Each structure stands twice: as structure tokens, then as C-alpha cells.
Image (cartoon, rainbow, N blue to C red; front, side):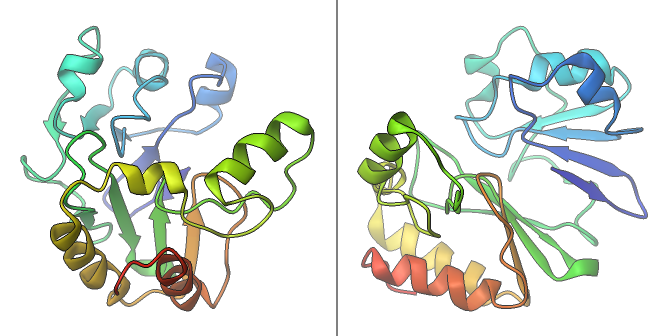
Length: 197
């Protein structure tokens, strides 16, 4: 996912399956971000393709990927794009450290694993995995994701703040974009799992 900004160009959550050619097609990148501890696998290749870019990750990223030169920790170090692309942590998930971003210009919330929306999933493997997650061919919060919410009050409090943000569109890292009704769709998906927002 690329977030174009006046102050830079941010590459969010580069997949570990991306080739160098695909990474270079992203254009000039100023910042590369691992939004949670589950999305650090593609960071080393992305930073090799864009050696001038600053690399950001959640707490614990240095231990998980010690071969990467990390320039800053999300939520700890000053984020240079706060005015255009503020970052928000989903609290209460110490082993996960999910972060979401609000792209103010487009009124879009960019998320990684908070919700899935793989509506065109095909094959037995996809059916099995996404059915276990409770996200098969629909927008939903993964049951696996919720297992990492160890501090439920902190988790719900942070999600109340996130769902109160001004956004229309929801851009999940896994699946199709939800245009115009993104905020309502996110709230509905969270409430379906019993999250009080």
C-alpha cells in the first residue's frame, strides 16, 4: 500500500513475496512501515530496493528483524507525517502492536490486520483458513486477531478513538477497499465480534 503525501511517499506493509521490480514500481519512497509485528517479513527487501527511505516499525521490530536498520518506532519516536498521515495504535495487544493510519486528504483509514475483506477468496485452503478466522468472503475481524487482545479495556478504548476519526473509506491490507461506508462497516465488523465501540 502506497500513501502519497505532500511531505513524502509512504510504503506500508510491503509483502515478503514482492520482487525487487515490484518494489521499485512503487516510485520514490521516503518511508517504509511495518504496521505490526506480523508484517515485518518484507521490510528488508523493501529497504534494499529503497535504501534512502526511513524504516519504521512497532515496538519489538528490532528483535524480530535484527538485520534491518530501523530508523524509528511507531508510537515512540516522532512520526514525520503526523499532519497528513497520523498513526494510531490498537492498544492492549502486546504481542502484535497493530497500528492504523488516517490518510487525511482522501479521508481513508489504512489498516493491516484489524479487518479482512478478501471477498474473492478461492480454493479449499482459503476457505479453510478464512472460515476459521470468520472472514471468508466478507469484511470481518479475524478471530485470531482478537486472541492477541490481552487487555480488553485498553483494546476497546483505543478502538473507540479510532472509530471516532473522520474517515469515509476503509483500506484493509487484506482484501477489497470499502468506499464511502468504511467507518460504519468497521464499526459493524467490530461489534459483530463483541467489541464495544
